[in-house]
Length: 594
Image (cartoon, rainbow, N blue to C red; front, side, top):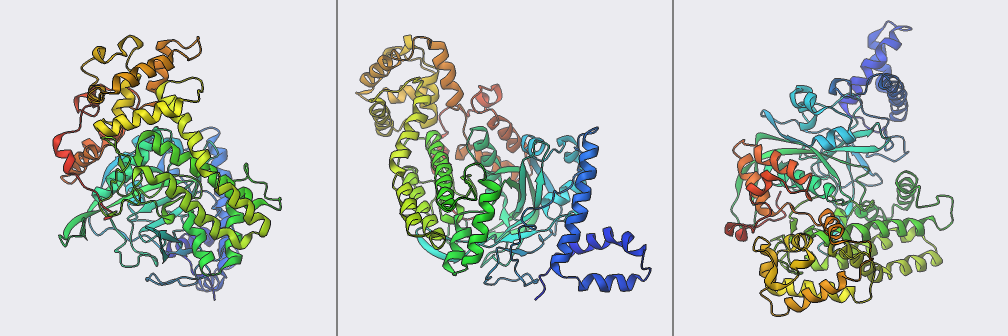
């Protein structure tokens, strides 16, 4: 059966091949007939040839003029299409079970009403896509592109098939139910990025969904993606956010209170969107040849520096590399109090990225049992359980690749997995040494940290502000009676009867820093790793409430502030972003509904 193709792709390819063809055959009807008879593989080859020519032309032009205007911007040659993967042979867009394929070709669904640009992350736009923000702000073509209303020439929209364990149970086929991978772009720094729209319409993997995303969840994903990036955490990026007046019905808290909301779309980026569930679905359906092909592709293109693809134990190395990246990311989450909220295996990137933002939250009043997701009744994905869930998900990865392993390899993979707790504790204490301004290692550092976290939980001290205010506390002020009143989080912490003893232990421990580390150097480094601002749920809620009324100023303001989370900013201080959360914020809830 011939593999189907996207209609925009065909229209574009018809156009670019037309001139070449009429040089030798003036019968246009015959040309169209001949084209339709071509195999998909040959169409891809022709497409590849023309994209390569376009890339060569663009690279020559960039030597004298940097490509910045959207009208000149082009997708790069796609790795995914030249990979030899099998694509879903069904061309129609309807919900179904897909077998022996990793992707389905499907176009975004255009909005029926006018779209508005809510915000652009100029940092992501210019540093990843080489595009000029000023130009894109006024470009109608750009707005059509990022809303899914028009498919660019050279785009090859795909929906990815994957499965996953959700809340501990195998959910079977899941997939991109409302996301479309538009294409790939290699930027001026030779970084490859995959562009994906989220909220852009139904796909074969939509299950019972309508393929849309609402504005409230899209605002949260847009802001948090960029916030984590600027906190130094591996994450997908968010470039743009648009909203329409297309109606979308949602039961936000699954209590029967159905409301009509507005449809929104986020353009997001990642080097790859493959996740643990990408491999699980293949192992589950015994599609072992395709499983091997996909893992080999991931090794070759994303782990070539960490994995020797010619080695007999390359799959053990692959597991170890994913293990390491995942471990680092989860440790960094814990160091800033970030709680993902839905750590299912279909939301766990094979590249160790933070992806698929839903009911996340940054813990405020410290509680290791903090659960931002009201849908998580059992607290499975609480703040404190994130490390054990990471290990659980890596074990599912182990099972997924087990058909590729011999007996010795399986034993070695299990050995790697069993090092998780030790490795995690080692990474975690190193992260918190930085947060506490400790420049060397002492055996009792773990006890010092554990004692602090215990006192914070007992007093419900604010996590982010406690560490930030310790950064701003001089050695001379490290006495309970000397803490300045504006360091409000430390004042809350000082209510505990044992805090004075902890503070004395901390002050003495700082004296064991190398002699070259002055108090000023210590405070400067601590301020560089302890953010003053994080995306608290109440801040996001204020932005959402304004955006619902077509006032996008708070979204844009927040984005700008969160791009410099460690730097004190006048506007952020006026808005209370480093102050105690308002009383109304305690009643806020977020759920999986989006």
